[in-house]
Image (cartoon, rainbow, N blue to C red; front, top):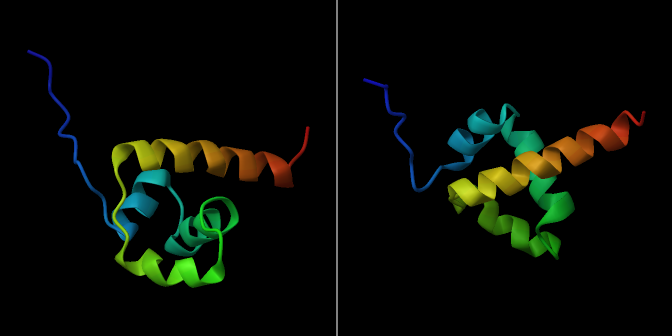
Length: 72
């Protein structure tokens, strides 16, 4: 019998950062750089919840951000 992983439908900001392997500050930086249009939108970030699809997108974006700082 295979162990099944439980999947959450929503993640808090802290849980999202943990799942991505980044700090909350790095998560907010990703959101600021790639998601929000205006700085006023950041006021909603502390109350934000993230869906698994959001985490997938943020993981891709964090990889792009990492590649931008270390071009090969």
